[in-house]
Image (tube, rainbow, N blue to C red; front, side, top):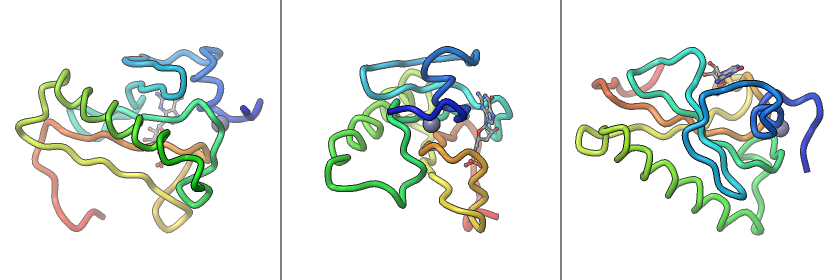
Length: 116
Ligand code: 5GP
Ligand code: ZN
């Protein structure tokens, strides 16, 4: 289930280039093209889901896979001790720009709270 007009579906299908760091049968992780921290990685399901608002009961293990992939990447990026942030923007007020579910894994510098 992919959307031919969706940028992140195209990255998952390797039709658009990206620095892919990790891939499984259901999840892809690649570096954000406009990083906001020393480590800024996007984790996506291969399945086209618009946002967290569309997640259902059937997606539980998929979300667990994504979180485990993020924790693994935090270790390989060397940000596990310093800490990391894991965020998904949903809708206009949150600043969602790409309507394929994605999580930002951010780390490598101190981060403020609340976010802007
Ligand atoms: P959002 O604002 O939807 O939560 O985040 C979208 C993210 O996708 C942004 O951080 C943006 O820099 C990133 N992005 C947009 N287009 C591309 C692209 O073509 N390649 C990569 N690697 N990241 C992208
Ligand atoms: Zn998509």
